[in-house]
Length: 443
Image (cartoon, rainbow, N blue to C red; front, side, top):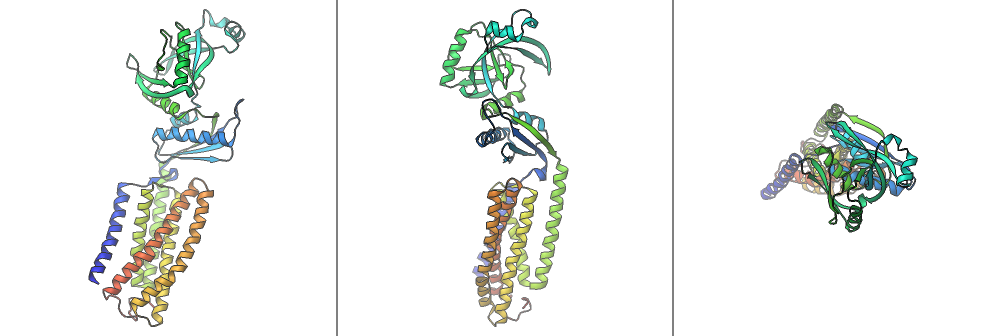
């Protein structure tokens, strides 16, 4: 019996030690409502070519997710709302301006045939531009920026778009001959042929490079470029180059989006929520601790030990699966704590009945756990089914509640049925509780 009890003790210690190690080495990610951050809501916009549809909004959500993943935000939440909205929650992001620009820009890259505007631009009316340069021609300006200020503005005639971002195979950060941050690009096979023909017939003239209809560079073509590689130069900062690459790699949005809500959740509010949740958990655990020991005596003390193991094991599992813990998630966790104790109550009430029937401690324990198992399983299965329904039907924080509740219930099954039984058997085998009428077990 001694060896068996030592083995049981090692199992319990291993579970506790492994859980503590995981919790400290893989901290749980906190959601927007707990650590603060930025919440953005975007609404899709119709265009002449593409209307807002389920497929278009699914594409918007996918592109936004790719951009945010490249930004390195920990556990962002991107979800659909209604038929034309996408909600973006960025925990830990306190500067929404860059996120808004990164997410909301369409990121449409275009290489456009162009010519420098001759003479006085004031005489170039839209009608004359179309008359001289073709129906698709329009007048624009190339701005040279230094220290955030426009130092020169050069008029340019834009003609037909020859190459788009769809023809770009790869983009990467680079520096120009002066050491300034730039964007290098490589075209696919289709783009290589188009670019070769464009640069061959456009020697001595500029090619305007536009991002979301804004000119970012307009280099002159000196020689034909046939290898399909080039560099986009301009007055870019390192951050601007990085953001441009993120947007180009993620692809362009299928439809334009407009931001309709921007809200910053401060860390003070999140810290207050965590502190109140801790207080609620401590108070609840204290009530459970005193009630179980007062009413069930030694088995009640065993159940509180199992509850501590339950808390550690549940937090460890949430860490391993990289769950984002939100305030509703904490509510689900605290609720599952109550259900973990409820399983022990069922077992101990069964134990009292078996002892009243005159059975010995060992037999009473086996019978109590066996007969309580069905009731515990049925009640937990129904709760898991409800939680699964919330997970598949709900969104956002509702899913967080469902996940923590489901994991908590499954772990409570293990701690109540396996660990509690293991510890009760240790007490019985060691002779601490050996007689049916012992005062250590309330009947």
